[in-house]
Length: 250
Image (cartoon, rainbow, N blue to C red; front, side, top):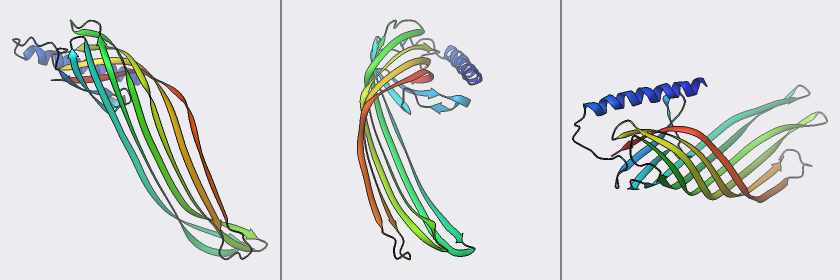
């Protein structure tokens, strides 16, 4: 509740500034914000007035086909990578078996695209209600590897058992989104909007992993190797809830 209140206050402040700015401009221009050929850059407003994703995209671009229709596309690209180095040490029967190095790495990436056709039900006036529908696609992958050691006790002796593992996964998704929203124009170039969205995607995911266990100093230890792979498929229904955003027109 507190976050929504802060967000509402921020929108009111922006609207007030935009209103007085528009009053100070030359009143000779009668351009309609939703006229054919108009462009808009759209983004969302999150907690603490930060920019956030809108309709699942980091930023969206809208082109006005007419005063009653528009097309909007948005894309999100994200990724991460990490590397780690550790040292493992241990004791068996008060005897130290030294320290062995360990390491790990991981990387992941995601890209999604949404395209929507928007219908404006009342193109005149400062407040506009609209509906939207369109396709969505997504792709993501994740890879990881690790090299770890575990001290294993055999009677009064200790042996390091080394585990080297890798894993990777890929996921694709295709579906559609639907929106219902309202947009209020503070002036010719700035609007504030609120939208409710629903989305559905058919997703399929493939994953594979492997693991090798060995202990060079434990002569009777039998090295092992294992592989696991598989695929999953299914439908995913998501609700975007109500989100707020700003649009800058030109």
